[in-house]
Image (cartoon, rainbow, N blue to C red; front, side, top):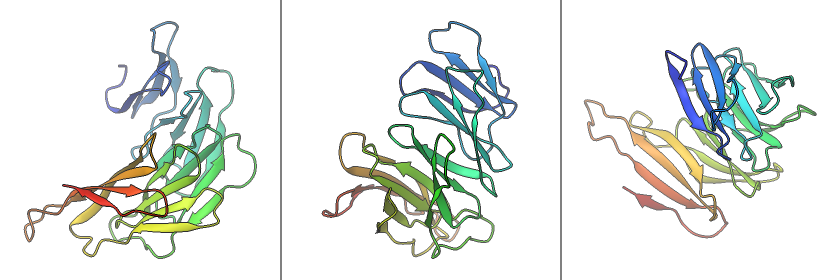
Length: 231
């Protein structure tokens, strides 16, 4: 693939496109090898490009805080530009590709945008999870449920919050880690067919505690049920 440093290599969800994002540029090919590749701006070092579930759109983040949403099959269409004050660290499309949720450095809120660029974004605010010195993430992970009804946000210190996409209510699934020297939230994802999600906590090995705790937790998305641990 035509980059000296590939930050992300992936197929689109519909299998029609192949993307390689690198420090010098982002390139998109048809998966069948037909036609010339399409060149896009370089990828940011933090947030990786994401395809919409139908493969029709591609969101890329740039270092200045801009997010651009491209129509993958139309190289002549101008991208929709969304603007953050700081670089974006994670983003996710809604199931129909009509919404994009983004999280940025040093920001107490995540933003839910229309992918056509119209209107102002809805903001989901995390005022009780301050920026940690030396690690400028408030929200580090975002995910959209497959039915489009919920958004998950995960902070650097382990607080997991499940929001309704209309912003009317939220539910905390996990409070902040008791000792953030050893824990950090690694990743989260929804089950595509069942109302549950998986989150991975990674232990940070240090001299005082070389066996830093780690493992995965499965959470029910509904109001009932308890989480269970996968060591």
